[in-house]
Image (cartoon, rainbow, N blue to C red):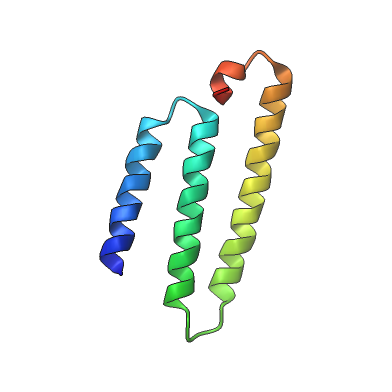
Length: 86
């Protein structure tokens, strides 16, 4: 299980480096990383209380909201459409 986690983590890191120029691509890669971290924390704390999982879920939700707000602000300005990736 840890080997599969490390393989997926490596792929996400490589794809993050390759998509550094576009904000939308980076946002999608970071969301994949968040899902990976949430799944790993859920597996690690399956017999304990799920407090770490709940905290990570809240932090991931806040990060998604902030990323989408930044994305819509860039989209509305029009001058930064090339940076956004559309």
